[in-house]
Image 1 (cartoon, rainbow, N blue to C red):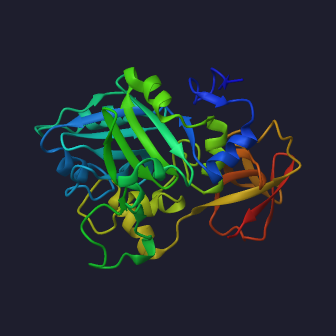
Image 2 (tube, rainbow, N blue to C red):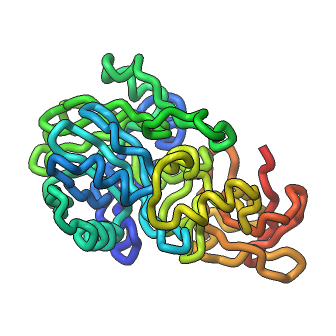
Length: 342
């Protein structure tokens, strides 16, 4: 039985599960499963100046980006708040940026505003390209040339003058695949394939499917934040775990850089991302995105993504005030919550 996500959901249009979400979670953590993430939006950026142009507009060091390389980037407001997050995949002629459902239009609008006389031609490619994700320890085995490639991100703690190479801080190897691209990522391998070939690709791979519920549970357990879920209009990079993968602290000027540098040097972001363990929550009614996290009746943060994990029970990624102790007893709605301090 395939169940699609509710039409009102931000993730509408892809399967929620295929009959047994817990089994699908175990598959993604111990083997390999195929997750349809074709609701992600894709921006194509062809043009000979695309690498240097994206380098100047975003938090990532992209001036040396070449064919077969992938990374992550952020677009910040002038005050350093996160406005966009995208994966970038370079094939030698085009940089493909895939981002969250509903975020593509804003990203494209910003890129078009910043074109000026640069030789680039950004366009919405969401109708052309679908994103599929092979998730689990067995994902890379399906791509021998990617299996030996190392996915890496530079820890923010390593940054000091001249200590980090002048290249992207996260490195995601990319290979051509079925008329599209295969990109090694921390959770497995993402496929960017032509939408017209999507069903044929799924059939040829022959990998057991898993729904987005299972994918989200694995993502939350891995503490990987998501734009619009673990972010709000005030979020800065140092508050959530996108810093190492998406921000280069020793590159030239970009919008919002002053805030990034100040917070990094002082080491005092106002909030931090945590993993919560929730008690007393109905298994079929996790707290909604944006639900307040409280300490002694006072709101100190918000829930981003809450899921039921097959081993950990009900868990949630949340953003809370930096000075909340790790052993604080919190509440989310009527439920008790404890911070996982690992």
